[in-house]
Length: 150
Length: 392
Image 1: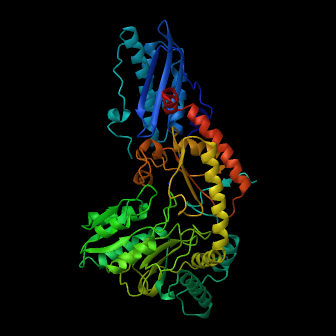
Image 2: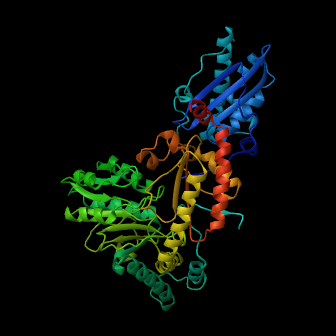
């Protein structure tokens, strides 16, 4: 019925002691991606001042990898300019976590997408254009084309 | 209290020390091949025979109707494939349910690829087969009905006797996967009209890698494992003497202790269910409230996901399992939880805890308290919970 997957120590650390869990009051941007049907939802809050990510918080419904990738991506974007934050890829999140089991790669895509969704919210609210930023995909599976389905 | 609280007895059980002791001589001392002629092997032959006698008596069957296999999955495969192949001239239709173990479901899918037709019966919200739907699914060419005795995930016990009666009235072979029920609830193949039955050793404090298939005398189906002439030519392979002895001893103990264990486990089970439902909000019991295995607790926790729950329980030394998709590597949660009508997101947040007579009330109290804290922690992290609180 179930198998808890082999996770790296970093994943376990970020799952057990997730960084930046919570909400931001009056955030500059909020993005929610994933769906409950597939078992993962991530919500990312960003506080952006003068084009720099001052703070990031998250809430996640999902597995160990979903929590760990959310936690890691917040650490990666804090202190970066919005342009730099946009370039934080799922690969970077995975590398920072010392890898993910293959069936969990979609969690890192979701984390990347959650940041994009929050940035999109920030950009549309402020009527600015961030180069390379596309409208968020609500359901990451659409983008992946169900590649993660084993 | 020990460091480990094992609540996954539906996955497997520890080997009872008496079982282990009974097996030992057949590894070291009496290692002879039970099929050999010389007197030295006679010890092994007799031991296999005695185990067969114990199992037959336990099921109300004849010794000649018990076949030793390598476990529940082999017995299920044998029952389905051999029945299908042996009766294909008579018909190609099989009836089973949507909540069977994968050993049945995936075998059925395989048979479908070979041209057999399978009806997968729905169950009600408690996971019980609907007998009128079973009756109306029966066709002229139905050759087999395979319905599990009790469900491995939600513990619901099926109306096996009634299903057997319907099968008998229509002259259809009735197989039941009794892997979770064998040794836990009384089973009588005569009273329950069972033609074929699968059971496994490691769910009843016996060894892994050994099981049985009961096959009624007048039901003629072919072999599944071809080779030597063991098991009256029906199941080839050198006798796994220590395993078979272990299965026999585990059955003997189960038969002696069944009532006592059932009463103890039922009390503990209901105490655990009540504790969770009372102390943790937005929870729901899955499976039949009363007509369920004495060791099975299956609860859905809204707004959280099962794998996270299992990982945090593991950190507290508690072993359980979940119907979450994340624990299986697929996108869909448990087929059983979906079949009883749970929405996907609630099925993802399910937890199965399966007790044994070895668990104590003290352990259950600890589990309830830890579970309460863990669920609260995960809900604080959940956007679904955030939305729920905001909108209510």
